[in-house]
Length: 165
Length: 247
Image (tube, rainbow over all chains, first blue to last red):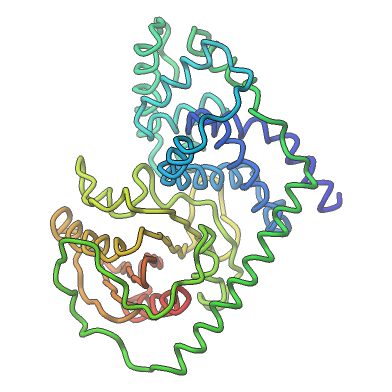
C-alpha cells in the first residue's frame, strides 16, 4: 500500500477515537480536535517509521496528549483573547449527559482521568495503559477503581456491579 | 461493564467534533510545512553552533551552582533563541548525537501530571513556584532499534525535555530544580556540579549511576536524560550540545 494511501486510511479510521479521548482528557473539544490534527501532521512527517510500529495509534495518541497538555499552559492567552474579542460563535452542543460526564472527568486528578480515558474510551487493556503511562499495572487498576468511584459520586450513578478491572 | 457510567462513556464516543475533520491531504500538507519549518530551525541552530564554537572554547561558570535567587533574572544570552515554537526537542537532541545505532523515536511518557520533570520528587508539593510561567514544553526520546517486546523496554532510551518560560523566569525555575533536589530527595538525588554549559547548568546524580543535566539558555531550559551508565562526562557533553542548539 502506498505511503499516502496507508496514512489516509489510518487517519480516517482513528481520528474520531483520538478526538474523543483528547476531548475527555482536556474538556475542550476545539483544543482536542486541533491537537489531533497536529499529532497526525507530525505522524505524517515520520510515517515511513511510524507505519511499521506495532501500534501507530499509540504514538499519535501520546503525541496528541503532550500537545494538549502543553497548550493548556497557554490557556491564559486564550482567556485574554476571549475577553478582548468576545466568545466564539455557538456550536451545536453535546447531550446533557455528555456535558455532565466531561465536567466530572475534568474534576478527576489527571492520573485517574488518563487511566479512565485510555481504558474505557480507547479500549486499552490495563497492561497497555500501564505501558503508555509508565506505571505498574497495579497502579493503573487503583487509578481506574478510584476514578470510576469518583465519577459515580459526581454523576450520582450507582456502580453496584463495580468489579470492573 | 454494563452500568450507567459505561453507557455515558459509550455515548461520549460518538461526540461530534466542533468542526469537520481536516481532509487527509490537508493533514499531510500541514506535516510537510512542519518539516520545512524544522529544517529551517535546524539550519539556524547549526549556524549558531558554528558561531559559538568560533567565539569561545572556554567552559562557562565555576563548576558550582550559583546562589539562590528570589525573582526573575534577565538572560545573559546576547541573542534571542530561534526555538520559539514548541517543536524544539527534535532540534535540540538528534540521533546523530547519540553515536552509532538504529535510533527510533519512541512515544514513551517521560512523566505524568504536572508539566515539570522534578515535581514527582516532592510528593504533595509541586516544588516550584514558576510552573505557571511555563509557556510550552516539548519532549523527545530515542531508542536504539525497535522495542523488543510489547511488555517493556530493555534497550537504553535517551530523552530531552525542552521548556520555555516567560522572560526572566527560566533562571528562577533552575533555582527550583536545585531546591527540589536538595529538599525533597536528598537520599536519591544530589546536585554534583554546574556551570558547564549555557547561561546556567546543573548536573544531578541519581542514586546509582544515572546523571541528569539541566541547562538554561535565556528563557529556555533543556533537561537531558541519558540512560543509566553513560557517566558524568557523556551527560555533560550532551548538555553542551543542547545548550549550543538552544543559543
